[in-house]
Length: 178
Image (tube, rainbow, N blue to C red):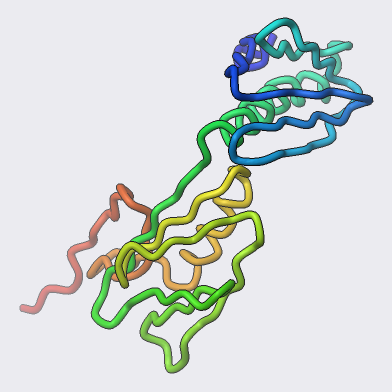
């Protein structure tokens, strides 16, 4: 039995849940998230908690058990308190700029790189080198953050690049002369 899948999900008072034919809809103070789940997993809503169980004991149902529970937990947390990722640009001349629904990145290339922001994601510029990404869908927030970070990932010699807040970069010594 999955240790994660066995745990019940507590539903806050501000969140309302509807489940119908494999489609789960969760509404909270920050918005609505909908997702369709496989029929091999059974989702039941009892008073103020959600219980995820599997119908059979096949390999695929065991693998989906913990995953389904984790996805539902992330949906409940997203609509009640939002997910955030903070990116920091480290390096001379590296900076972020916001244009309506675009993020412009000046990362030492000969041209600025422009990425579009999805409608359900909020991006806030705290300083020219610090970018805050927030939204109710953990997957979309993480995806946008990883796309921005992939433009210039941190390098191990000087630590220059785009990194997550709190990320530790393992530094290398570099060459030594004789």
